[in-house]
Image 1 (spheres, rainbow, N blue to C red):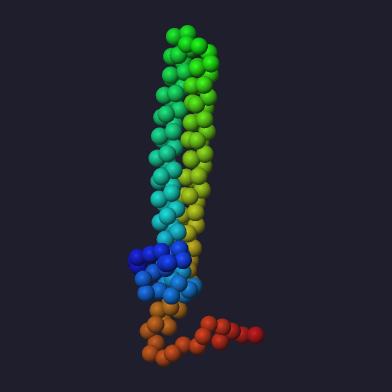
Image 2 (cartoon, one colour; image 1 turned 90 degrees about the horizontal axis):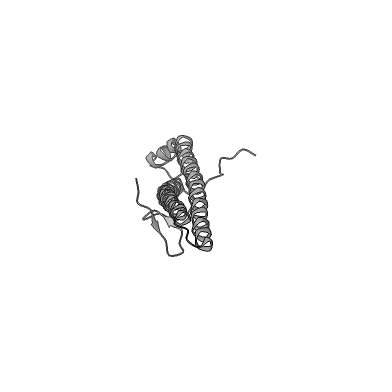
Length: 140
């Protein structure tokens, strides 16, 4: 698989590629999208676990402070922090699920693109003759 690198304008292109929508260029950009979605998913799952642990610890601390008869203002603040951490954990889980769907969609697109155009690309590159521009053979 070709390495994907950011171009000067921020677009992802393969080395030696033209940055156009050619077969290899598009396949490379879709592979880069799938890879980044996987990284996002993994990062969000880690964040979700971290926030869930912290939310549980804050909840336990709030209960302990209540039992120790700490001023109710502080108990309420700690409980509020726990609830906020639970919301962050839930949202990061939702984002991880979305990233997972994006990764699967990108991989599905890549596979369909390969099935549809891979043979054509190979045949064109195997031919010693110059091929017509796209759309030349289109039936009107």
